[in-house]
Image 1 (cartoon, helix red, strand yellow):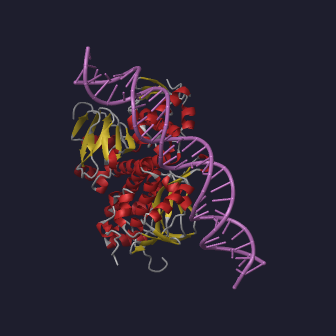
Image 2 (tube, rainbow over the protein chains, first blue to last red):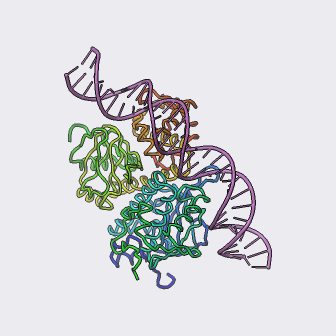
Image 3 (cartoon, chains in turn cyan, brown, orange, red):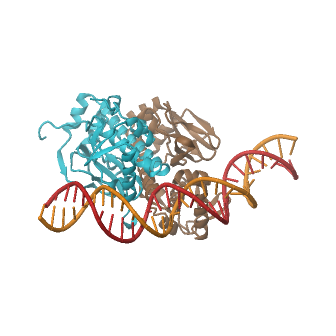
Length: 247
Length: 247
DNA sequence: CGAAATTTTGAGTTCACTCAAGGATGGTGG
DNA sequence: CCACCATCCTTGAGTGAACTCAAAATTTCG
C-alpha cells in the first residue's frame, strides 16, 4: 500500500482496531478518479468493492430521454458497491461528483474475511441497511416535500455526512454538487434549484462563497428541510452535530 | 406450529429445502393482522422479525402536517423488518394494506441460525439489498416520472411481485391499495391518482372490476411506466412474466 | 485569454394541486 | 334483510408551484 492509507470505514464504530487493520490489508490497490467519471455502471457484474478514501460520489439511474435521477450521495468512508457483491449485478451506476480516490477490495478475499470475522460482516450489513434507510428517506423527500424543502434537506444530509467524515468545520464545507446535480438529486429542474438556492440565501439559511457553504444556524436549516438525522445511523461519535460554536 | 405452514421466502431460490426447514423451525408463532394495522413503528427497537405469510403490507414514513409517504410494498414471502435486526431501531413503520398473516422469528435464534448457516445469512443479505434496490427505483419513480408513469410503474411492480408470490393468474390480480394509498406511494394527491386511473382505463392499459385489476397487455403497461423488473432481483423461476397467454 | 460550463434572471405555460360536492360501495347493527 | 353510516371513488372549476423557453452574466479551466 502507498504510505499510511487512511481507511476509516464510515461504520467503523462497530469495528475494533484489529478488524479495521484486517480490512485495510485486503485492499489491493487504489484508484484516482477525475470529476464526472463512472466507477461502475448499472447492469455490470463487478468483481471488486470500493471504499471511498477521498472525494464525493453519487449513485444514479438513467431514464429515457436523457433524464437522470441521483439516488444517493457517497462520502469518504462509504463502501459504495456492496450491492454488486450481494446481488451479483448493479441496479444503479456510481460516479464521481468531485475528483476522488477509492480503495479497491476484490470480492473473493472480502468474502473470506466476512466468513472469518463476524464483526466485519456485521459492519458491512449495516452499510447496506443504512443505504436502504437513506434511499427510503429520499423517497419521502422527493415524494412529499416542496422544492425548497428538498434542497434544504439535501444540504442537511450532505453537511452532516461531510461533518461526520471529517470534511467540515465550524458549519462550513465544500459543496460538491453543481445545481444541475442538485436538480437530479431532488427531482426538480436546474433553473428551479437556482431559485431555491437564492431563496435559501435570502432567508439567511445558507451563505455561499464560491463552492463553500456556511450554515449560520443548523437548527433553522434542519427545520426548513424537516431533517432528522436518525435515518443516517451515524455512530454517536460522528453524531456531533455541526453546531455554530463547535470550534 | 399450526399445521403445514407455508413459509416460502421470496429469495428461497438461494435456499436448499433443508435450509428452508431450518428457518421455518425458528418461527415461534404467527400473527393475524387486520387491515390498516401497524406491525412496527418508526423508532421502535424490535426483538423479532416477521415473514409475511399472506396479505400485503407497506413501509411508510409520517411527515409533519399529516403527510405520509409509502416507501415500499411487501408481499407474501417478504421479510419485512430486517432493518430492525441489523440497525437496532426502525427508520420507518410497517403496516398492513390488507388483512394479513405473518410468521414471527425472534432475533436471538435468528442470529444463531445465520452464524451456523451461511446460505441463510446470504439470503437475508439479499433481502436487505433488494429492499435498497427497490427504494432507489422508487426515488427515480417519484423524482423523474409523471403522475401517469408513476401509477403505471406501481401497477407493474405490484403485479409482478404478486405474480412471483403466486397471487396472480392470467394477468389478473387483487389490487391491494386504495387510491389514497397509491397517492401516498407515488407522491401525488388522491384526486390526481383517480384521474390517472381513469386515463389508464381509457387507454386500455388496465381494466378494473371491483378491486380486481386485469392487464390486457403487459408490454404496453410496462412501456407506459418505464418498468424494467431487473431492480426487483426476482429469481429466474419467479421471473416468469405475467403474459397475456400464461393460462 | 478564450471556450465551455455553470449560474442567474425574466416571461409565459402546464401539470398537478386545492376546494367543493355528488355518487358508489361495503360493513354493521337494528 | 334492509337501513344507515363510513369509507372510498368520481368529477368539475379555479389556482399555484414548478416547468419550458430564451438569453445574459459569471465562473472555471485548458
